[in-house]
Image 1 (spheres, rainbow, N blue to C red):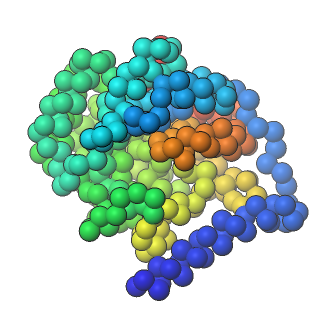
Image 2 (spheres, rainbow, N blue to C red):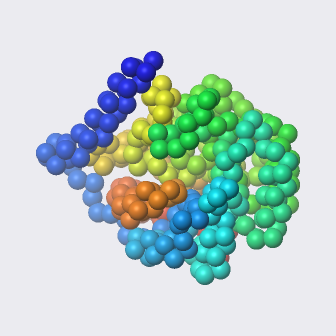
Length: 322
């Protein structure tokens, strides 16, 4: 098992190294074309205590990002909640605040988390609920769990209590689940989405899915919208290569050109997809401008009307930003 995982990770690493070399060697048949120059709304970013409001606003200005949906990572010693609230006070026209993301929830959402989240939404006027980690495989740069994943049942009693408490508020909820165990997780996620047709759910990173899986989710549930964060590259960070190989490819190939199935999907669901970076840990914030630049190149390959929706207008509508 360990040998298989090591070989798989090596192959994934070699692919990452080869991609820019192929482009530099002139192996690419065409250049991507002019980059998108329009407005950007980053539909998903998160901070801890080490990431200051000034830093967030500085990188936004540097990358010409107009607005951002920002939420805190709730850690005992490094919670980012205070910084999110401060960022919202400093730049209310640019920062849309979301309720914090917890890391200790397992199997179901506990009553304390549900109570706190609903109270915080009322107190701080949060515009959305940050990521609930329904299915999250261990990453090489993060926590390594005995089970190899964090898991919360979307049909759990605590989850239902939270969604029921949001009914009158009509704010979106981020539902993080990854497709490495599609047969286990998709039926329960689908039942969950189907129980609450009036509730808007945001599916971060398109679940690292294949285009056909995203198509199935969006075709079946009109109340689901998707952030495309981290889909600018193949997802190579899972600790378990057996999980990693079940995930879908990036939107673009090694030459930064749209894969046809993804371009078709983005055009078809142009009203339900959102640009996002998911900047969170320091290493992601340090390369914020680089990630945004890649995304401008991706968006530039779409029809102008489609690019405008995915880059800005859809997020502005979903978060009811003013």
